Image (cartoon, rainbow, N blue to C red; front, side, top):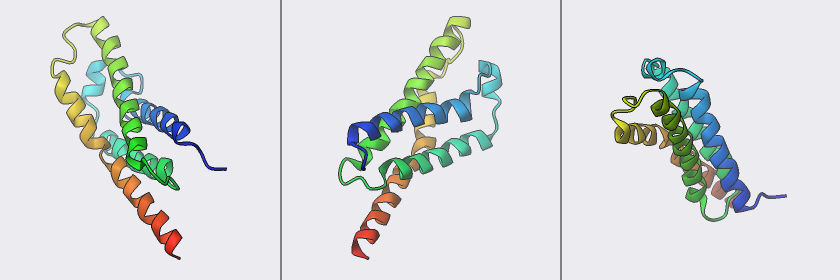
Length: 127
């Protein structure tokens, strides 16, 4: 039984939020998160690649919408963290717009994962 697109959208949204929480948030304070090393960012990139692949494998259309939903999940999770952090100290997140640019950059491998899934689907159909 194949998943409907709306189920894939919801799963990708949830997976994106969980990936963000597992790699970047980790229930650390704002100052502790600022000192995270590059391994955490690369882990987010690797997770988005895997999520992009798994969530779109077998999708016939709207493949990149699924990845958009994953990215939305990451951004919503980050917005919730921002709301919590700013409540504690209003001077946190003074470079707010750039945070979304950086997170979006490290989430780009999700689109590559979707493209790999598309190539795999095409090779499966051809063979």
